[in-house]
Length: 424
Ligand SMILES: *Cc1c(COP(=O)(O)O)cnc(C)c1O
Image (tube, rainbow, N blue to C red):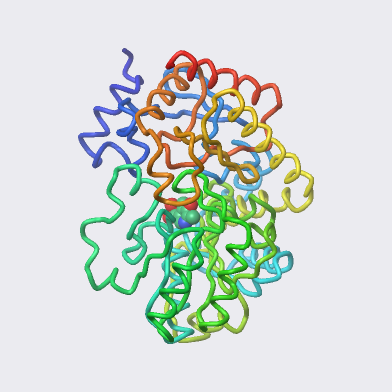
C-alpha cells in the first residue's frame, strides 16, 4: 500500500469527516467496500489515486453530460478564473445564462440562480407557498428533492440507500405540511387534494424519478398532475435537477410536453460546478425578493466561474440538438442489451438507465424497494474490479454522456452478463 492508496486515504478521511465523506452515498457503505479516491477524469473515463481506470457511468451524478474535462468547458472556466473568482456583485455571465435559458424554455420566463439542487428546491417551495398563500405540499414516495427539512420524508437517493428515508433532526412541524402521495398514482394525489381542499401550495415531482433507481412516469401521469393542480388551485413543480437539459434541453417538460408552473435545475446547469436554479412564469417569479416578499439570497449565487461552466455546457447542447437523439438512443441500446443479457428488470428513459435486481416491473417506491440490494452490491463490486464505475447504490441511475461509443456499451453489457451468469 502506498500513501495514496484508497485504504490509507479513507482512514485519514474517517478521522476528520463523518463517515469519511462529504455526501453519504460516496462512503460505499451499502456495498461494503472502501471508496475509490478519484484523481482525474477525461471524457467517459475516470482515474483513481492508485492508477486504475474506469468507464464512468456516474458522471458526477449527472452534470457531466458532455463528459469530463470537456475542452470548451475547461477553457471557459480558466478564462473566467483569471479575472477573479467571485465578486458578490452583478456580472454579465449570469445575465447570459438566464437569457439562454429563458429564450429556449417557454415555461421559464424568469430564473434565479442558487448554489445547489437542495437550495433550488427549498427556495421554489417557499415561493410556491408565498405565491399561493397556502402551506401544504404534496411530494411522492421515493422522490428525492435534496436534503431540506420539508423534503426528507420518504426521500430517495442516499436516504433510501441507508434504509432511513426519514431523517432525525427534522421536526414534526417542518414535515407536517408535507403530504405523501404514491408515485405514478393519480388517485392518491386526488385523494390528498380533496382531503386538503384549498390548502395545497404545490405538487413537487421528479418528472422521471432517478433517485429510487430510474422510474419513468407512467403514460399520462404528468398530464394528470397538471389537470389536478389546475382543478384544485395548486402549482405544479417539476424538480428537473437531473432531467433538466438531459432528456431534452427543456428537460422532462419538453420531453413529455407538460408545462409546469415552477421548475428547479441543478447538476447539468452548472456543468460540474455547484449551481442550482429555480424558475417559472414572470408572474410567479416576481414574488421573489427584491421584487416581492419571498426572501431568498446567496453570497456566491450566480458565481462567475459556475456561470461560465454552465454557459459552455448549455451552449454546446443548444448548438448540437442531435446530441440528444444520440445519447437517448445510447440509453435505449444499453438498456435493451442489459435486459436481454441479464434477464433483470431494466428501466430507462433517455440517457438514464437502471437495472433492478428483480424480475418484476418497477413503477414506484414499493416496487423499487423490493429489488435485491445484496445482488446489486455483489454486481457492483465485480464491476469495479473489471473497470466499470457505477453509483454504489441500487437506487441511483446510470448516467450516460456523449463520449460513449457503441463498443463501450457492448463491453459493459458483456461484463454485466458475465457477472450475473457467474452468480447463478
Ligand atoms: C441531486 C438532486 C437534488 C439535490 O441537488 P444537490 O445539488 O445535491 O443539493 C434535488 N433534486 C433532485 C431530483 C436531484 O437529483
